[in-house]
Length: 96
Image (cartoon, rainbow, N blue to C red):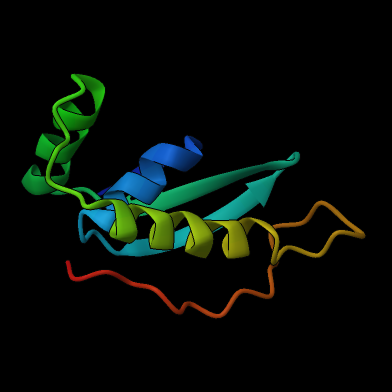
């Protein structure tokens, strides 16, 4: 079983993607999208930087690209029902 880190924080997920962490999966339940990443020592370090406002290792263009990619994830779900099934084709996976 994989050790994962899950967040519903859209902007944190965008930061992690811009920092090079791969979006492992995502789900939507009760109108909320959860973003899942593999949990590693590196991701824990990135989380600490993010929450202590010391995340200066991501450039603005990468972050903006990650925000756009995640918006496509959020908006890819079937809007006629609130299911876990989505129509998203993974396009941005990062480097890690």
